[in-house]
Amino acid sequence: MAEKKQNRGLGRGLSALMADVQPEGDADVATTDAPRKPDMMIPIEKVKANPDQPRRQFSEEALAELSTSIKEKGIIQPLIVRPHPQNADEFEIVAGERRWRAAQKARLHEVPALIRDYDDTEAYEVAIIENIQRADLNAVEEAAGYKELMEKFGHTQEKLADALGKSRSHIANMMRLLNLPAEVLEYVRDGKLSAGAARAMITSDDPVKLAKHAIGSALSVREIERLAKEGMGQKKGSTSRQKGEKDADTVALEKALGATLGMKVSIDHKPGGQAGAVTIRYDNLDQLDDLCRYLGDGD
Image (tube, rainbow, N blue to C red; front, top):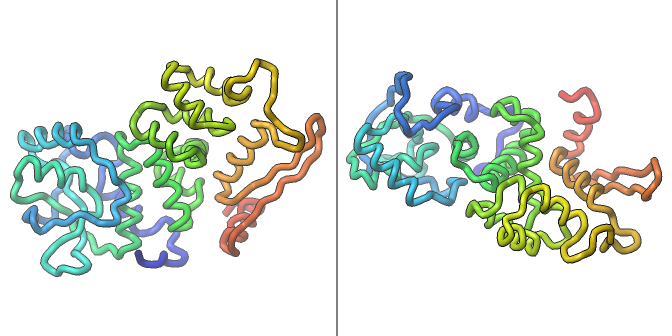
């Protein structure tokens, strides 16, 4: 993957995507608005998937439904492609792999496409944003998308919120999910746990055990929050904290601030007291510059 360009702001990729892909609704279903006219029709065998596509899971059931729709109505929203980096007579998908897969199932011979001259970095950025904009994206995929946009392209939560029409708190809450163990995240991907239920487990001493119990007992988010705070298997009012161990609220606040800043945050607060200390650790000078902007005028 190409190194990110300096001073790109939100990048040419984002503005191009917003112009080419419907930001609301399902781009694969016909609407009353006139569909975007494709640059050309491309033989389907000349279109190749992007090996760096950030979305890894495609529901076979959803693909079958989309394939049936395509057989009846065709592909309403064109794919976004770029000239293939290695093969001059082929194209690589930037956005629209789901439509391409469904078109193959529908046995189409060609697909409508918008051709864009993106470099590797821009193509990857557009692919992530296109996935985030889709309504059927699961919470873990969405959170991973935000994380990649921040880490790989230097975007802040505020800039992403403005560009994508999300609140900053929504982005921060989604990213907090990534602090959970892989097994719990898999439950979210499979639809066994909601994003809200999973977030309630972040402060638990044993999120995996709590997740299994929550699924088996069909617990509400409020019940999960109570168990996470009290500790699994303990009597109400008891505590598992050892001397010097931080309480769940402090840990949750550390993680929330860390997700917002993209840095490790430590809070030292004596129980019952009013004063304490906040320590923010940065990994490089770019992060230090970001922190200075947060503490300065916010630009």
